[in-house]
Structure formats: C-alpha cells, structure tokens
Length: 235
Image (tube, rainbow, N blue to C red; front, top):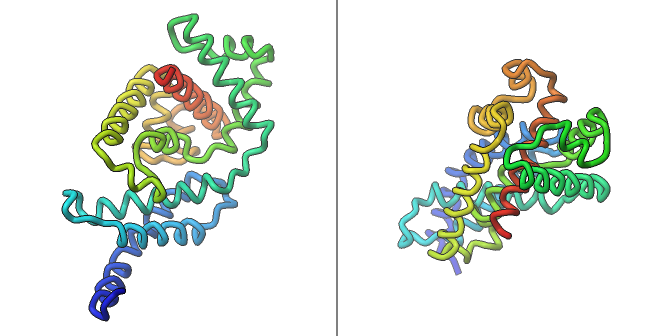
C-alpha cells in the first residue's frame, strides 16, 4: 500500500516524465501509417511509464530516466505488434522474398541484385518492386523490431535483464551492425538517413534522387536482407 507521501512522489514523477512519453510517441508516429493515432501511442507509453515506476530498482545501476525511456518505447512497440494488421498474403510474400534473398546471397557470396531476386521469385522486375511496396506498407519499424528481438525487452520481458540476456543483446546488436555494413551502399545510406538522421521519405528520396515509393521499395529490400542475415546467424 502506498503512503500519502508515496502517492505524491509518484504523481510528481508521472508529471515529470509524461513529456518524455509524448516526445517518444511523436518520434515514432512519423514513421507509421496515418491510421495510427498519436493518443494510442501516448496511452501505451504511459502504461510503460507506470510499469517502470513500479519495477525500477536503483541498486541495478541504471538511472530512472534510462530505465523509463526503454520501458516507454517497449510498451509502444508492444502496442503496435498487438494490432497485427498485415494481411496473411503479404506476410507470405515477405517470407518468400526473405527466402529468395537468403538463398541467392548464400549462393553468390554477395548482396543479390533486384533483377536476380526477381528472377529467383520467377517474376518481372516491376512485379517484384510492387511486391516490395506491398510488404513495406505493412512493416512497422522493422529496424526496431529486429533490434528488439534481442535487445530492449517489452514490459512483459522485464525479468530478462540478466547477465545472460544482456550478453545475447550485445551479440544481436553486433550481428545487426555487421548486417547493415554488408548492405549495398545505397541501401546502407538509406538506413542511416532514416534511422540515424531521421529524415522522412521525401527527404531521403531527394538525397538518393528517387521517388518516395522507390525509397519504400529499397527500404523493404534492405530489411529483407537484414532478416535473412540474422536468420543465418541463428541457424
């Protein structure tokens, strides 16, 4: 049971960190379909903040700000995953692209080109690019999801902050960094512009000299390469 003083301190802490929830929600929303409401992200993030307040252990060394930030973002990602709006046919196509990329790059020993992937899938280049557009429209923060497979636990996984899981986290990040380094130069630049510089699709298109839809296609292809590489690492 909370004391009256404890309630006041908790309320003060909540008010202090609610702006952080909003900032993270705004940052995430710009990369999501228009159907995702800002209020939904804020609500999920607030739940994450409350969970962080209940679970924080100052003896573990991390600051509350760092701990809360991780739990807020994890709660938002959990909310997005729970929606699962990607049609089954699109998931099937995405898996087919992953398998084609994985098979070709194992065989070739280098990043497969678009024409080679299209041929492996027995389709024309334009049909393949449309498939990339379709699969990209359903991906939610694919880079974040890749990282979170071995990195930031969601709220329900908070008990996994053990030395073993931290070691797995570090190994997963290393594999992901290596995978990004192995991408074709244009896709590597795209990932840096999107996830590090936080440019939007229009701005990235201007840098690369392509349309926004082409940026989406290249992004989807890069994510497929990364998923395939991580799958090989786990095999």
